Image (cartoon, rainbow, N blue to C red; front, side, top):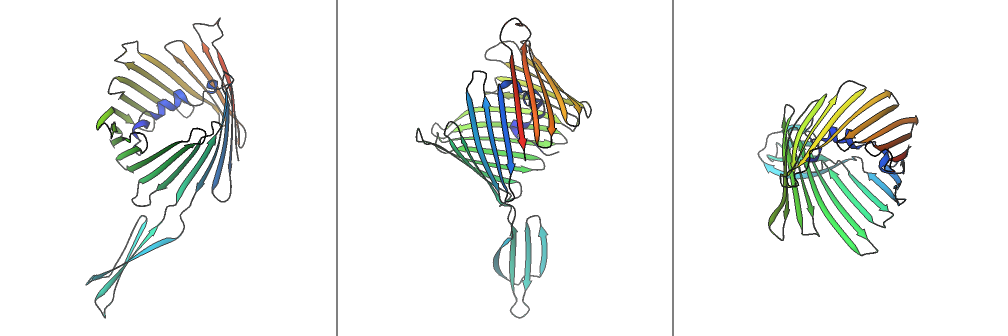
Amino acid sequence: MSVPAFTDIAKSSNDLLNKDFYHLSAAALEVKSNTPNNVAFKVTGKSTHERATSGLLEAKYTDKPTGTTSLHMLSMQMRTSFSKKKGFDFFINLSPMTGKAQMLIFYRTSGLTVTQTWNTANALDTKIELKDALVKGLKAEVFGTFLPEKSAKGAKFNLHFQQSNFHGRAFFDLLKGPTASVDAVIGQDGFLAGAAAGYDVQKAAITNYSAAIGYTNPLYTASVTATNNLSVFSAAYYHKVNSQVEAGAKATYDSKSGGPVGLEVASKYRLDPVSFAKVKINDRGVAALAYNVLLRPGVTLGLGASLDTQKLDQATHKIGTSFTFDS
């Protein structure tokens, strides 16, 4: 298994506890479409329980690898050799007449991804991703944000580097601060250890730091994370019981506030190949239910509800629906 990013050490349990619970919005609609020229469109719309609506239009273009580029170099008295590496081809041709060698380096481009989004807040976001172009496992991202109404701008630059036993990231906010956030995770035989830190360039000071340890395998994961300058502790557990049942739990304690430990427990049951149900409950007695079914290829319906078991006679309950169309 590959080493996850720092924020994904507890991803299995977080997904089980947070994803596919449709009561968070009164109604949600998502439409996805893919074109033959590698452009994917996505339109989303949400209506909250407070009757506020929001929407987003996204277009993503992915450039597939096309052709090679070459670099020519000359050197003296080199032996003829030929070698291949993933992403690179090296060819050295020795001339017996002059004793000179010409080395051709062919590099197979990995392409790039450009994503443009526009939402109902009139914010324009652009993301450019370039993966495996310079070094295998290295991905560079450039983010740009523009709000015409306020003439506000944002620019960020991110780096991701992943190898078999290492996953590191660096995030730079170029206009605010500037600030930088870095995190790294190392793994061996399923054991994980990671740390993260934020740095303010103007103040020349570390603004926050976190740490985490975990263990993961195909059937279960466990992790302990300390965030907010090692003041908030979270312990998470996920277990894939069998092909139909998944279970997970998360406990959180804030040492600064000194309040009670927060606890969430969730389970997912696959009813058949096209539908599943989820349930979770927390220490405050709030229970959530969800049902997801594939009505037909490309059409998914989600239903959800949350109930405050300690206030059943009050109007604190929520119901939500979601439709997803994928073509």
